[in-house]
Amino acid sequence: MWQRVRWAWGNLWRKPLRSALLVTSTAMTASILFLSYFFLMSVDRSLTASEARFGADVMVVPKQYSAVAEQVMISGEVSPFYMPASVLDKLRQIPEVRQVSPQLYLTTYSGVCCQVEGDFSVVAFDPASDFTLRGYLSGEGKRFKPDSLLIGSEAGGKNAVNHVKYKAYHEQLNLFGHPFEIARVLFPTGTGADKTIFMSLDKARTLDVKAPQDTISVALIRTNPGDEEYVKRQIERSIPDVTALTGSKIRETINRQLKPMRFLSYSMIGVVLIMAALQAMTLFSALVNERMREIGMFRAVGAGKWSVYRLMLTEAALAAVVGGGIGVFLIATTLYDNQTLIIKAFTLPLLFPNLLTTTWLAVAAVVLTATIGMLAAAVPTRQILRRNPYDAIREGE
Amino acid sequence: MIDLCGVTKTYDGPGLQENRDRKQKIHALGGIDLHIPRGEFVAIMGPSGSGKSTLLSILGLLSQPTAGTMVLDGLDVTGLRERERTRLRAEQIGFVFQFPSLVNTLNVRENVLLPKMLTGSVTKSDRARADSLLADMGLAGREEERSFKLSGGEQRRVALARALISDPAVVLADEPTGALDEATAGELMGLLGRLHAAGKTVVMVTHDRAMAQYATRTVKIKSGVIGSCSMD
Ligand SMILES: Nc1ncnc2c1ncn2[C@@H]1O[C@H](COP(=O)(O)OP(=O)(O)O)[C@@H](O)[C@H]1O
Ligand SMILES: [Mg+2]
Image (cartoon, rainbow over all chains, first blue to last red; front, top):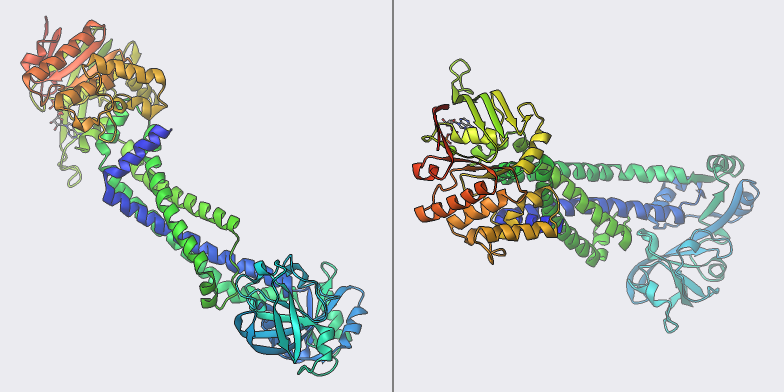
């Protein structure tokens, strides 16, 4: 086995220039495959994250703001709209509603938060009833008190999630004339929520916030499974002046928005695969045809067809694994090094897959490229193997 | 050991693609009857283009006759499937080519082991056999050398060692002394003579009368037809 691999490797070195071309082209194939699928995954992961976070089963907003609200749920960016807080009591009376939690959109704070400068949305939430942020709290940090804040991952800077676990980490922020202390950081979602500062609703009511008295912006609802649509209709019938949006409606909107991008990515993957296969076949048919006599000679000394395939495919796979490995490694390190830059460049929500997933993706891209390479080598090899060994030897002169 | 009966071989000549009506057939072999007993050393002699290599390729199961039959060791091999022919080539026949046929990327020992490397894995005893064959060929100590560094005569001897790696009953050699000087050619013929002495059936193609002297029988072929036979 190793003897054969070493031999195949030696054969590749016999034509250094052409092998280099082969390796380069497989490197490009593998990295484009990796890249396009990587972005698809990033988007999907980010969507799942934002769905889990803001995609409560049903979201209730003032009637005329349904379109705005939908966008808020998708992007995580807030805009000010209000409805009376009494809506909450009416919602709690609906039996199929399991949990209700209000949020109040306050203002946009422009300035420095924890060494990061920017525009941060400030949102008040109810810690007691909240079920949407909980899953995203950093594991460590300080206890949440009335004077505490939760901040989105970007508001705290790139490494905030790591910093909060140190006792010495101590950040203060003045909002509405009141000093707050940062308690916890939220894990990244890839949406505008990462640039949001959260404070307690009770505390916000005691401060001079711009929002009208006794109002909320949204009510997030969790229903029993399958009851989404039913609850939505119940709400719209029993409470005037509000609109209820269901999670499925929002998922639909997201998917509609992403459709062209997804289509583009998948077509790109398809085109790349076809191109790579054609290219590899061209290279290999030259490579294999030159060795027609050698292959005929192999057959003459008693090698079966499968033995010849095995050698040729080993060579193809070697070139592809080396090329693909280099390509994927380069592209992956580039991506991770410039993560922030890339997320900024894309206005779409992006959340990079974790290391394990990325590794799997890289391996899959290399394996797929190697498979293409082997197929490409198999076709011209098959042509030669169809001849008599003697004819192959004679024609190969 | 080998029996040929009415073997012909026809190639499609040039002009086939361009004009089907004017297609020419090249009759490389025109009805060969040949009996080669076990343990014989036969020289097939004839001018260039007389069909010697074609005949040897049929004997070596490298190509199929257009008509006629061939029996190898009591087995009619004419209608055999490719898989069976491959097995017979690997086990029964050792082939030495007319052209330099060593693999440049492999060293001398690996070249001898080539049939084993292609078909399966190489065992310790295979390696030992390769080394002892190389020693028989006067190439002891050269096992690790790159094959292209060897002289023409040495390369032929490596090719002969390779043909013997599976201990075949039949050794076929196509102009083995082709581009060699007289002394080197003589050495190689000595080696073939030793194989014959060891009981192997040897069939050699040559156009050189001096080389044919080493054989026990010379078969003359001209325009694909066997002329006079002679027994020494
Ligand atoms: N694959 C082939 N296609 C067409 N013609 C061939 C082929 N192989 C051999 N021939 C022709 O058959 C004749 C015999 O060739 P060959 O057996 O090589 O002769 P020799 O080895 O005695 O020189 C020649 O005329 C040659 O051109
Ligand atoms: Mg010839």
